[in-house]
Image (cartoon, rainbow, N blue to C red):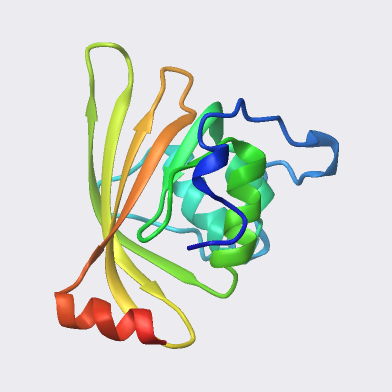
Length: 164
């Protein structure tokens, strides 16, 4: 269990993070300016592309700014993370050094104006690479209401990951 987040803070109202100290999430990161812009087969939604670009750049504050005020993230093996500040702290603790490799996805507009996006790919760490799915819900303002991250692995593969 991540020491930053316990079940005690799940119902709290998230506090906005100081946007004056953040990079603008709409600006390209260094790798994009060098012409290596991220592409995901069948996904053109800018918010989803920026999610992966900012995470891979280690710009976790910009990643968190893509979420709605009460947006949430449900990573594997951890409790629900709610709010921008909590998401930043979680990503700093858990995602540093990871490389997300989204490969393809689907998106579907819902009757309420929200967009459900599913992406499949891999996550590379210093110790392993694992297949992953990301399921997003974007609100009508194209902010991330929530993302759920699932590992696609056999029970034996998951046990090996937990031992590392």
